[in-house]
Image 1 (cartoon, helix red, strand yellow):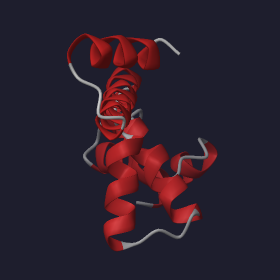
Image 2 (cartoon, helix red, strand yellow):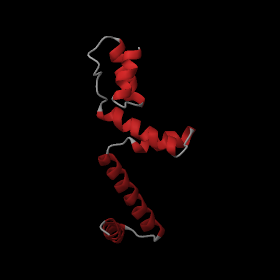
Image 3 (cartoon, one colour):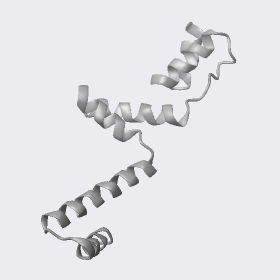
Image 4 (cartoon, helix red, strand yellow):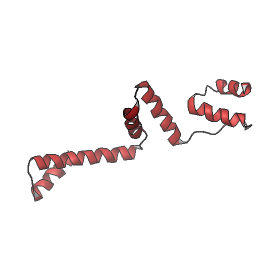
Length: 110
């Protein structure tokens, strides 16, 4: 245990990386442990940010849900929100048919 702790300290490992390293080291592995997956790394980064922001409960769950999403999903979500906003404004203006479609297209294209 002491030897593994010393190695982890020398490598300046913290959080999940340290836990993975310690687990592998104590099992007699070569001391390198296994690397975190990209998803685990992103989750760890988001968790650290949530702690700094002092988020708890539902706020933290919502933050984590958005934070760990791949950028592609975030862009799709933003596009969907923009489309909903354009549709809502067209409805508020009581536009129908071709007028509505032209308005929404112009709204989406800036």
